[in-house]
Amino acid sequence: MDRTQASRRRLLDAAASEFAAHGIAGARVDRISTKAKVSKAQMYAYYSNKEALFDAVLADQFQETIDAVPYTLDDLVRYAIGVFEACVRRPHMVRLATWARLERAPTGRLFREIDEPKIQVLARAQHDGLMSSTVPAEDLYDMLLALALTWSSGSLTFTSSQLDSAKEHQRRRASLATAVTRALAPDSASR
Image 1: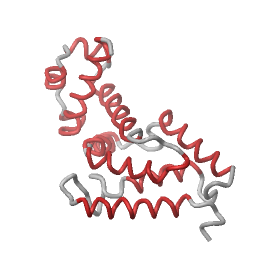
Image 2: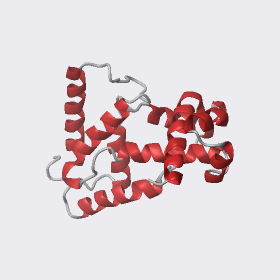
Image 3: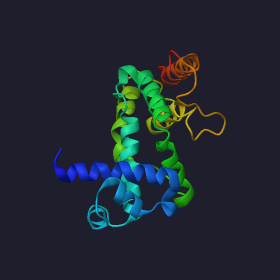
């Protein structure tokens, strides 16, 4: 990793902590630049303003979270469990997404360039009869992630943490595996 990449990485990591704690409006670029050991001038050279930095942080954190484990058609259960576990280990990702929704109220697909290849994998599997085709691939992908986020810090009903017992985490993994398996079953298998 060259110096520029290292500076950007430190900046994204420092900004992720700041934005997760304080949101877009409450985050302070002075704290971010100090923690990242990057001058404000350098920060603004990389990202034109605080909002652009937030967008880069959110995309970076989302990418890291959904790529926590390989996305392969033959093991989407493992993928969903990996995303669940990544969110338990890194609750700031969900906090960042919550701040984005609170302060910006975005609609539609937020990360099309990240999501689209994964959606296409599902569409091909549906076309080949390997999984249910009753739900469009784009919706199926969104539901797969929603299932993985069931116990995340964004849940309205229950939030898990790293402090929960191993038995509780194992029960959630098993429940998630069952739900994903049933949701993705080929049409003939789901009847």
